[in-house]
Image (cartoon, rainbow, N blue to C red; front, side, top):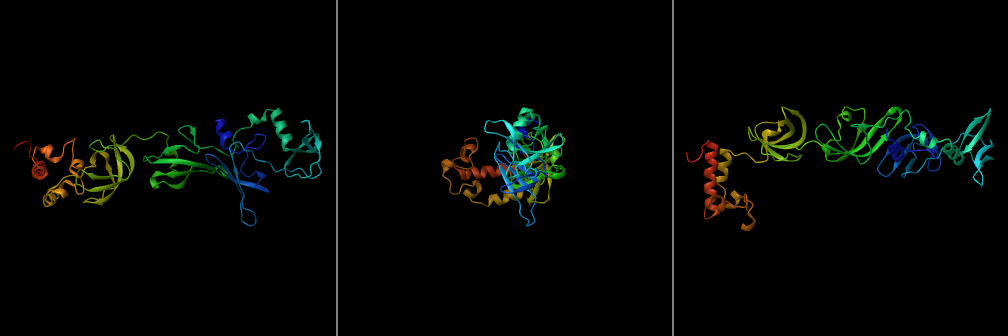
Length: 337
């Protein structure tokens, strides 16, 4: 595990030792027992177990901020501390909640926080002990630790933005995320779930329809075989080199739920029924140009409006030529047959 991850996110005591789930530490005002640790991009939240009234304490630690220990040295026990000149000596502390004790030759001594830090630095413990507690396994995806701000993808190609990583006792860990699959709603992913091993840091390749147009969640597409109008809701595995697209039917004869990407098109397929319906429309309905100026013609293709495209003197005549061309295509007529 990269030590920079620990230094940057995991809460540490003043001597550099890591805080453990279940430790007694100094809370906002009183001692608290650590129930969970949640790391966010700019803060680490340490939450306590509930007290007798059911309330919890929360420490919101800024980057680099250290946690104070709750000591067990009885009142009146000689305590190692630092004097005015910085030397370590013994003294009697008025309060013992910020001291811990050691036993030297059978005698118990309290140790103040500053003295503890000085001792730790002298013994080089500040670097050698910057490791995760043994009960904590930091989650990894593709061999790298998952940290707030990471962007991951699931096996259906949905983007997942990590906002926090939460640890509790017994190795329990969840990711706090915004999941594109459920409209970017905040949710969690348990690292023991079936979903977690499928996560990857590799952005999936763009899925294309039969015309080479990218397919995205939320698109409206049509099935080439039966013309069913479909709404794209996700992506699945590959079959024979084609990505399976998860869809739901909008209208049409078949209730598709998964289709090969190359069987879909963003262009509505033509049909005799659609041709007959369009032939009864007026000019502006046919070319979908209501409230549009001719210079902004929405039916322009390759820089040519319908009249220019068909070589006619008006878009009304172009409409007649287009209807004939569509009828020939539906009938399978080629050229001037």
